[in-house]
Amino acid sequence: MTAERGMEMADPYGLRRVIEPQGSMPQPAWKIDHTMVCGDDEILIDVDVLNIDAASFAQIKEEVGADEAKVAGKMQEIVTERGKHHNPVTGSGGMLIGRVAEIGSHSSKQRDLHVGDRIATLVSLSLTPLLINRVKKVDLATAQVEIEGQAILFDSGLYVKMPEDLPDLVTLAVCDVCGAPAQTARLVKPGQTVAVLGAGGKAGTLVLAQARRNLGNSGRLIALEYAESSAAEIRAMGYADEVIVADARNPVKTLTLFEQQVGLPLADLTINCVSVAGTELASIMITKDRGLVYFFSMATSFTTAALGAEGVGKDVDMMIGNGYAHGHAELALDLVRSEQALLTLFQNK
Image (cartoon, rainbow, N blue to C red):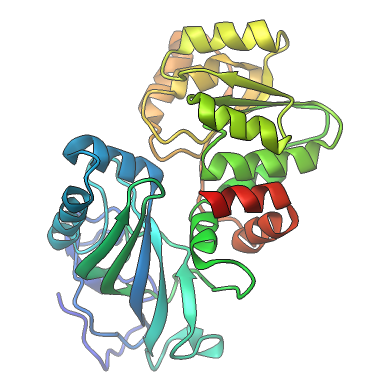
């Protein structure tokens, strides 16, 4: 169904753009209409950069190889088939930076936005109508992709105006995972033992910085990272009390290393930011009974987590990572502004 001007009924969630299956919301839908005609309560965006979700980008590189042209081709294939960048394997997308090209006559965003404003969307590409005319550059290290194209933001869609005091690509990288430090700010309590898996990635480093703020000089903050090079960066930042180099896809080995380097009790709170599959059980096993595991990673299989906890007899609470929390973008950007080590790391990356 093609979006048309002059509609009479409000459609804040973009339901009229769903093609398959009918009745679905845009995010879980298999295919949506990505005709770049701005509806009355939509925003049309000229897109500059896509920041592909880490789990999605890792899966694409694994499928087609670490080759810019092949990754670009796969992205074009996904968008052509689905009308959005919604990875059919991981189910995740990413976010974008662009300039407002048109504002619908009935859009609630007229109060805040103007044509020409540069914004970063805070909703997933997995629900955002997207048209890629040309892929200009693929950064295989950062998952940031420069394109010529357009996108639609629904009236319910979240965004942040691009700040002038931070580089665009830093803002994009931070906003892509800003739900993680916001939830960390809510969850971490003084005196806790907190473990962070995937601590060297974008989400992981933000979580470490926020967790350290919450803990202050109390408790213990444990960083787990697969690569020694990333572990060295974490040590240099100074947030973690212990840094463990471990492959979290091996839960027993990870637990053994945790017990050897940290001891007991196990973690009160474990935050999983890993971008590859198969780390659910490691997260569960390093968490104490009646502790909490927060799965921010989009590579998480919640079936594996639920049945795995049952299988190893672990009585832990598990929380699904929500990409949205009130004030999440502002919190994450302020965190980067005020933490020089964090800002330097994001700039270098």
